[in-house]
Image (cartoon, each protein chain N blue to C red):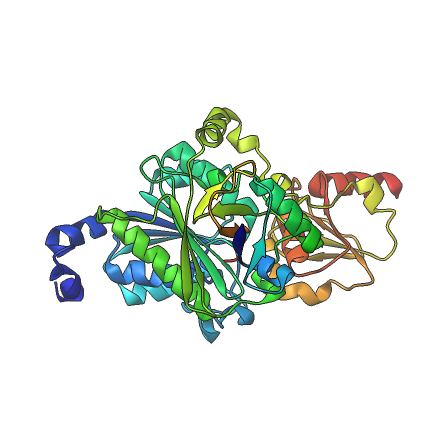
Length: 358
Length: 77
């Protein structure tokens, strides 16, 4: 097939290697700065099945580095927008979009159906979640992370090699490491690191030697210098993750990383002065809440309505049970919106309370 | 002995340099960190790993090599 002819003539790949790529199943978590270039090369290389996990929507400020997206993708889900672009790039492969957040509840089932995981996420909570789920499902993780002009690359959990926790056993204090939206990032940097993640994934699939396991590549785009730092495996860190398997879904990775979402009870919420209640459920969900100071903004649409959150007002977000509203508050916090709370108990508790107080 | 220290990421911003050479008279990694905390108090607030001769080592490791690097976790993607 002429599409892959430049691969097939390579001694290290050949027709058999190309078949390995076609049979491979790769899950990419995060279709952002790292995920976009990784996905682009994986799709072009003919990886047979590619899964994409991302709950976020494309914003204009993403376009400086998230190269699968253009003006027409603004406001759409990243996993779905990436799939649309990649299906044009290579219609011969199977691309599955998961427009949802990776959580302890979906991670193990999702990982089990793929051969290897690419970590292209932008927060510590998800990185520890990926690490633990990969240990429990025995999948290698191609890890990439960036800061301004510098990138880190390695492969964790590969053939008994070290894991993320062997290097960083505990997450840094919340807020001590800034993310791209706060401090900026050179657009081409995730392009370089994400492409290298695709390269390591392809090496693993082709069963080539010298996969970047047990050492971290530290790359500096300013100086074009790189260092390889050797990482030693910690059996006890891996044992701890394995021993917690039965409690995996109950582990709160956000709390572990110091990200506790502000919550409020209905009793306290109705006492707040200058408060906006925000229903983040889908528009058709019951029970209906009709308060004068209540608006409906479904969770998936939240990023398009950030201007509704004023600095001088409290915002109380609610859903059915209090799970989606926590995700919503987390999104608002990421956008530097203050004085927002997730309502404990969801719509029902708010209705109970407002009925009693009438 | 003279020790060369390489700072990655935000640690380089705190030290206002990407590397430097200092004279060190004690023995362990944690003793070296005490010297650096004194010099750059903000470092104390940060989490990082220490590499000696390009290999991550525990904080109680004895310094045998003059080549040290301080590696913080990055979260960006």
